[in-house]
Length: 437
Image (cartoon, rainbow, N blue to C red; front, top):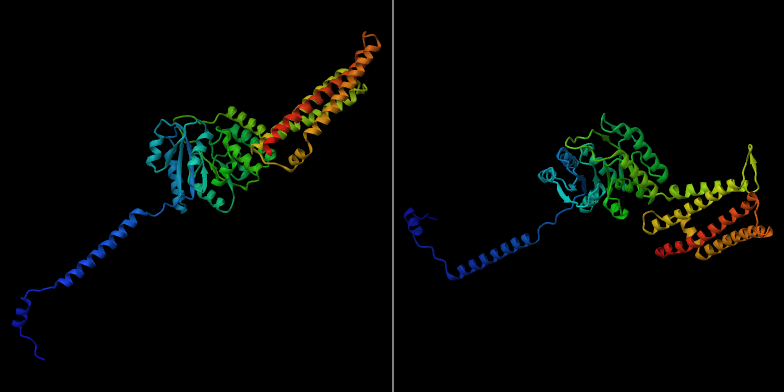
């Protein structure tokens, strides 16, 4: 086939290109459809942004004028979580700082929570309640705790522990750098209180005061912590132990306080007394029951020897000894009553868990039985006092032998007092028990 000549091709390309109306209409319809599709896709993306994934870990630091050390603490926490691949946040619970701590926290990318109520516990509670993580790591912002150790706590929490307590003391594998802890705290205060919390509450820890610890947010919500001061940390340990929480301990290193603008907030004797006071308030057994039982045992033993006038090692136990025995019995019985009232109230308020022994007591010690026992003691006491009055009447209400008469009067007065206390306490305990039903 012969090819067209060049002149023929040039003439053909110089002819106008004509599209009929039908093709134009089809092109416009296609353009409109494409535009609607693109618009629909853009609108959908703008109206339904990708949901924000909550952090797994929240590092909470209480803060009150910590400008000297706050930045390094925040940076360490952020660095440790980033290197360990932990999705986390840093929450600064500010308790009224005026030294630029808030600005430092904002610059470092931490989230600041303002807590108006003063106190170490108040600041932590405000920060923890604002935390969004499943796990919470709390620690002071004075650079004494190394927040590069955060992944260790997270790992233990991921293993299933509810509370992971740090331990600075060598007894639990911890390390204390030179100058990091006062000698009185290191060798007396911390070991003594840690030993007390192990024996009084069966807490499996060696450093009750360590402020670097991790716990699940679920546990925090269940504990219902209430202390606004330094007792907050010990309250968490004690309540977790009483309620059978899974507690683990991990050794850490304590570094010297990095603050220079002000002294540490901790006050040795004030906070030590507050800790001891809190221990006793949370332990009716040691505050009431143990002293009460010892006093009653001593009173009954001495009274039993003094009533017949027994002589021991040359000392005759007479009326005066009987009076001391009566005082010991009455005070001891009051201690036992207060212990029962306290434990009943604490269980009703979920400050401590119920126990099989308390359930048995509540089933057994009914109001009616208490009234019967109290009435019997009251009757016995009145009988003894009546016998003493009869002896007085036999001598026409004249002088009586002091030693002989008081051997009847003192036990009679003691039984009357015990009967009245038992009757009244039975009613009071029944009122407290109404909250359990």
